[in-house]
Length: 442
Image 1 (spheres, rainbow, N blue to C red):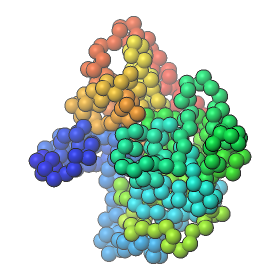
Image 2 (spheres, one colour; image 1 turned 120 degrees about the horizontal axis):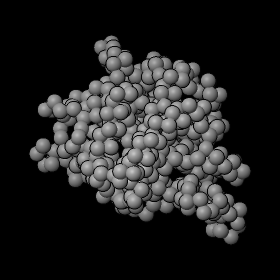
Image 3 (cartoon, rainbow, N blue to C red; image 1 turned 90 degrees about the vertical axis):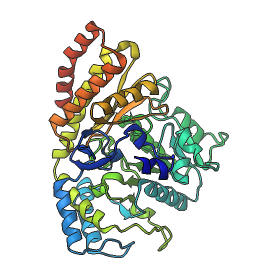
Image 4 (cartoon, rainbow, N blue to C red; image 1 turned 90 degrees about the horizontal axis):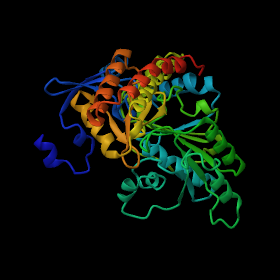
């Protein structure tokens, strides 16, 4: 591994947690160069919702390359671009009665966020944006300005301005009414808060600690934005494309954001691609006013269209994700119940799940123990205190259960064997807890 440490910047991070050289990957399993296998509960940070080298999507990609189709096209019209837009409209937008124009802002999620912030300011003529505590929206300067993590913000090198943080759902542990502070500032002419151009929010904060906003909280936020003529941006970069069950994570709340940011799994295959969805009345761009070189990667259009038609023309994947998520929640609740002295806490929605520990050191130790047992997962949260999993939505039941058993073993290795009475009580509740969640109507 000398070439990596000699030539790569010290900024690399994941390779420090998983110090092996990976070579192949199929489905939910990665293999290092010696052939050792690792169950993947990371999924490219959510860029591989359909698994590694999904065979159906791989065939589409191989055929596309073999036919000498267009690889790179900026915003020129191509048959692949047309096919993707038709699939996006027919499979996603029309069945949900959503009316959006599609912006291709560049290859990554930060590009989608930057386009959203830029357009919101252009439309409203205002500068400030409201973000939320523990938010993460990307590593470019505009995206960092609406990100909460102090380590990431510290890398900017310049002041991050024109953004004001507000408390995310349950930030005060239910001690105060929802939006009591935000609404008061908006309505008080002496508050010093300039009327914002937009509010940007994640329905589930992935990097912030798998903090899931309640549907009612999101509905109240949408109502508040409408009342004060503030645009609502939902950052669905990590939690979209089915991660929480529905294709869009905001569907559960029944809201319709003004702007939606998508990336990561939208190409279906891990190929860079991003979208910024905007309501038609917001489409006031001048030609070329927002652009970029990599807005037309043909293979991403091809695999993205195929993924939509394969997985989103019915509710099978959605229902499977919700069921599997309930199983994970049951396991995590069982583990938490075994160690009441540590006050562990299960978090998340769908197959975005976390187990919160009292410190980042403990969560990191559990992830290291899992890696030693052949499981890849990361930590998140302001202090890295949440053990975070993002399994592929296509993971098999057997693989999911194998990973959960490894997590159980890893927690035991770090925290020790649980109190027998607590363990017995937790074991009795897990199956009934899972059954209740699986039988609850979506």
